[in-house]
Amino acid sequence: MITVPGGISSFRTLADGTVRITVDLQEVEADKSAELLKMNRIPGFVTFSLHNDFTEKEKEFLKEIEGDLSGSGSQSQRIRNVLYIIHKKINNGKDEEFKEFYNEKTEEIIQHFKKKIPKEQLTEGNY
Image (cartoon, rainbow, N blue to C red):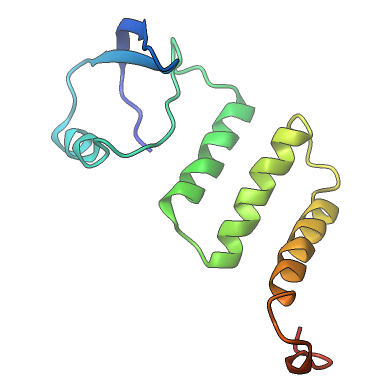
């Protein structure tokens, strides 16, 4: 994730319903410029704030998606992060009952893949 000062210089709606926004940045340091170049034509998220005055909730969300998008951590950590973001979105940012939500969703994943295993290969303790 990169944060740089800038402003929206143009905004238009395209025929397919998407939006094109042109952003002009103030002077950008070489390392940030290189990082921006690496992001060219790669889908991601855009966040804009007038005064870099993100709320704590917004900062937390940005940290969550940054970790998720970077692919850092183990596969189980990544899936937990994704489920956590979905849970918070569904529950308007509330953390209550995440453990139950996590257990329910991971069980759905387990059951999905168990259906692909022949019954004779399923033995007590290996699923």
